[in-house]
Amino acid sequence: MYQVIRGLILTDSRCWDPDSQRSYQDLFDKLDTNKDGKVDVAELRAGLTAMGISFRKGAAQKIVSSGDKNKDGGLDFNEFNKYLKEHEKKLRLTFKSLDKNNDGRIDASEIKQSLEELGMDITQEEAQTILQSMDIDGTMMVDWNEWRDHFLFNPAHNLNEIVRYWKHSTVLDIGESIAIPDEFTEEEKTSGGWWKQLAAGAMAGAVSRTGTAPLDRVKVFMQVHSSKSNRITLLGGFKQMIKEGGVASLWRGNGINVLKIAPETAIKFMAYEQYKKLLTPEGGKVQTHQRFMAGSLAGATAQSSIYPMEVMKTRLTLGKTGQYNGMFDCAKKILRKEGIKAFYKGYTPNMIGIIPYAGIDLAVYESLKNAWLSSYAKDTANPGILVLLGCGTISSTCGQLASYPLALLRTRMQAQATLDASDKSTMSGLVKGILANEGFFGLYRGILPNFMKVIPAVSISYVVYEYMKTGLGISK
Image (cartoon, rainbow, N blue to C red; front, side, top):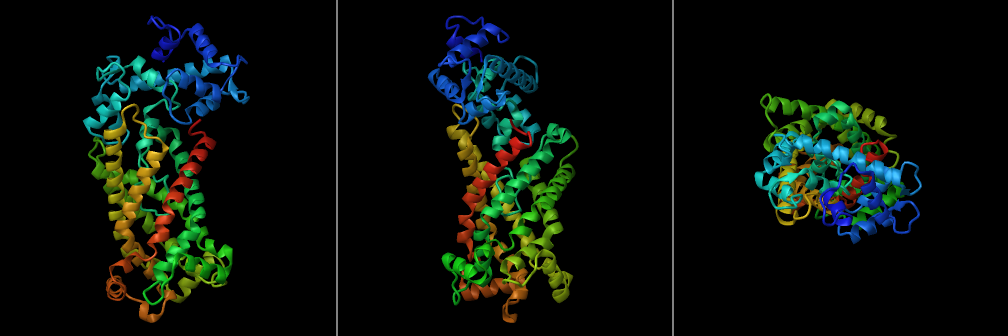
């Protein structure tokens, strides 16, 4: 904030006092261009731009929303003054937590250490890139004034929020349940913030899956029924489903697909925390490969627990009108006709598919993140929404490409009771049959609608997650 005030008011002096009521008043008067005693979003945005102050997209709206206690659409001086003082107080606490040796400055090694403590493993070069985005005087050190300047008009005030930009989170829900789980700080665990984030993520996943359910259902149809002799196109699949059961049938099986999010998320989170403790030496930091191993094991544990719901989801998705009267009727009919083993058909390819999906997804995301930091993080270490969504979409797509044949085998094995006897086979038999009859690309039947749902799914889940965080009080 020092540089901002110096440029606006004390152009040739460095004597501004951050606690000075007069300095806040002068800044407020500069921003209040129509002199109505309030600074609204448009005035704040225009004023900051005119002053050459960089700020993130949406920052002006968040600042006004956070400080506007009487909800009149703008900040009066008291609200403006209170927001700046509270924001600076939070910035000061964060600065002190980063300044490990208490010398009044932050260097790259301190940034690296702090990020590692939050579960984000970065190189010294990446830490230096982050530091350079805040280093005004080129000393490769960030003092309090530089730190305050950088975050004054950025609603993110602590390192946890900054790190969360770069966390590869399962919030970006694409309908698959085999990604690495979320990381939470010790503060979030003790304060209870973790469950709010999980709840927000679960709701985001529910809305996202509901929005893309028709594409998911046509994908399953193509995986199971499409072949060289019975080609099912995207449009043909939709027409066939609507003709058989009406428009509502496009969402068949979505109920259980949404219902399984909550238990799977909770089990995965708890298992992930336990596996991290088992794989990490006491007092040691979690490395990237340990995160991957813990995440894969947690995914396997969660999938094993809810796998019968996966089978029922496939059966309901492929079911004809009137075949099942809901989830419980489906479960009873499977149990009566096929026995308990039917609830674990396709389990082996599903478990095998976790490793390539999670491994490639995480590796590609980390590579894209590092590439962005190296090439474009000149003015800020915060990537912005488009970069975040882009990295998540590309990494998820690469993970799907690697694991899709296993997902197709899983779905066909889950659906075997609905197929002719000649189509029923073991996992190896299915692979041989597909390769012999349809060629290598037969293992990728239905991948077009699967890819088509990635971008809308990621976008919907991100938007809903942000609204849920605000509603639950995670972010203001």
